[in-house]
Image 1 (spheres, rainbow, N blue to C red):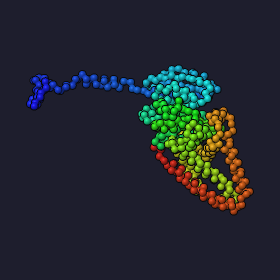
Image 2: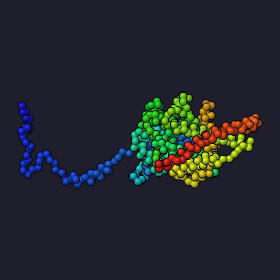
Image 3: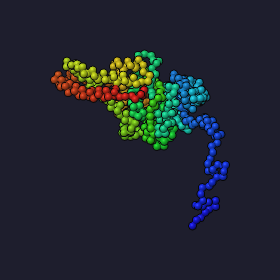
Image 4: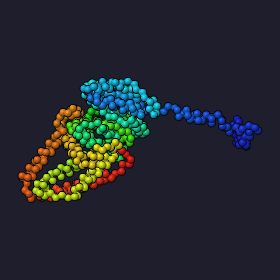
Length: 498
């Protein structure tokens, strides 16, 4: 049966034949006018506005009268200026409010990408029991509707392109929850040999830590509060998953480490920038350095230790804490080798059994080479950094100081002593407190007791037997430690600069 529909010529009909002088009915002809319009159309498409992520900057400030102006100046000179800048001043007793208030209001400047504008707000929240954590959470409430939160310490000055790099990197991958800048310490204006020595040590310490993270896929264990950018969506997910009202909590001595763990646990990546750099404030006295380092170490131990000690449960197997465990084990080995060497050397000299061997020069030479590589990895290395690495004594002395911080933090942890480490650091920065001397006094006491027991209670044959057993043990540990230093010093930095 052959069924034809209206207008259907049927299966027997051939293709339609066009009338003479007319184009085929199914063929379109090009409009010469459209081709001429194409360049103008493409130019108009290029001129269409693109989405620009919004960035809210939070600066928690406590007694930052000496540095807050420099921080705000550096932010206003960025190639990518934050959309808003909130200075949250808390518990201050200096002129921070007055100085920051001079910057309050709108600011506009022309950059290479066009005109950019921002508004600076200054908030004096007065007495704040949660200190920096409270200031950060107050700031978050002001920018939570924006795409990103940029946290900046009141003594941190970024390089002019730092914000631009952070925004481009975090906007390029939705999996990233936060990115930290590469930190260094400006040592251009220092007075006194002690300040220069301590800052050189901190610069080397920061550089080694940065390079470790850069070489591990740029995965950052700690998004330092000095200069880091966070996805506000990631912060909201952290609050939801952790049942928190605010992103930062005061359960930990290191609020930035805890938040970094929570961001990672929420399924996001925590990264260190490959290019964004910022200069942070350093500690210029033994007292202030001790308070800062003890607080950092104590907070890290609290996060690493298994079990429930407070509101935050220890997470010893969290991937962000692997580097922390490695650092602490490395410090234990450093303490063991140095203490054993000093005691065994004193014991050998006491019975005239000391014999020098040229092989003993290999470990310090390996350490010098490793320290030299660390200095070379710095983006802003100077003569003082190289002298710190090559002269042996400065780096060794700084290691001894760090050993004191490490021991004090662990003793404080196991003693379950309830102290406000934030207040202790503030007190130390004001030049008060003597806790920083405790490790050195303790070592002197231990050395005196050892010498008294060694020289008065032990016979010479027994002393000789102890030395015969202890020196080989120290030798094996030192060989392994030296081999590890050589391996580290041979690593390729793949173009990264710390």
